Length: 88
Image (cartoon, rainbow, N blue to C red; front, side, top):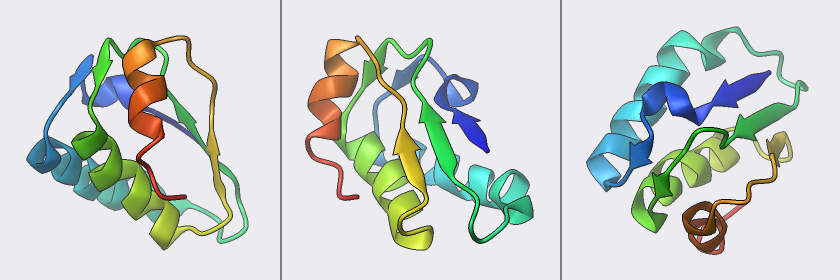
């Protein structure tokens, strides 16, 4: 399964927005996932990603689905910097 973060906007900047995105993904996308299926997180189209948004969404995703998360590569500097704070 691939989660395209651009569906949540190009500017992913606040913890409340990250929490809202997480709850939306959990309710409408992740409810159909096989327990052993890999989850790819796609950063294509993201202009700004902050550590707080990434922590709220990606860290929570990793806690709920341990060992299933694959972060797809990105050339975006804010994505690279923010992912240094994410707990996988």
